[in-house]
Image 1: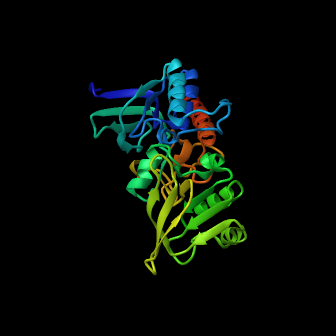
Image 2: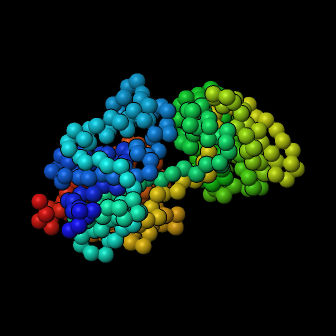
Image 3: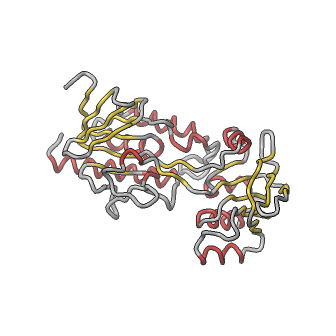
Length: 317
């Protein structure tokens, strides 16, 4: 084995609540896990200013600090946490082969846990990204952040089921919700559309697109354009929620693993097992429904337990 090739019992790909929880369980089971953090160490939660809905933090915690805490806990049990990202995999044999950083290092592994997550899609406006990064009222998760906007006016961008769900969820907390839809109709299911139109404090703005999110340190409004009449208008809001979809970070696994049409890995129902023996999935890479830190952590636990049982059945100690 060349010096840039290394064999491990359990390789975890990706950080975040799923990866770190998998590492905690795997390390405590003496699987000596090695975790590669990927392009965004800590995952999506590093873009979240306040996490109020994760059990055990009565005063809430910042997303980045929570990831530091989880990393420390994984390291306490001697998980090897490394920088680097996976650029190629070969799942053809019983020993799984993974290339790191364009082949600078090759890892062979008896078991692999995928925790690469999903990335929210953004409009790409300078003002949107600036206020998002400043924690100034731009979010891609109403369930995570809606609580902070109780009694205020907010906007949601998107026309699918997720946007409709987020808008109706926010309407329970906020005095007014604008749903900004680019087309003349929503893509959401008929049932979700009925729910939107039957919510009195929810106004749908068809044929509208966002030109700019207004505000210096926090959202104060949004400048919109009607893409039919070219008429511009400003809405006064304090929260701006982008719900135009997520992209699972799974492209590198596409030749090997069963996925749905969007790219989410499809596990064996009720487990974290993929269609490849010894390869497991946890977190948002397989979850397009819940996408919460606590559910990601739960599936990280499942993946480590499934991997432990797999290795034990193979007699790998």
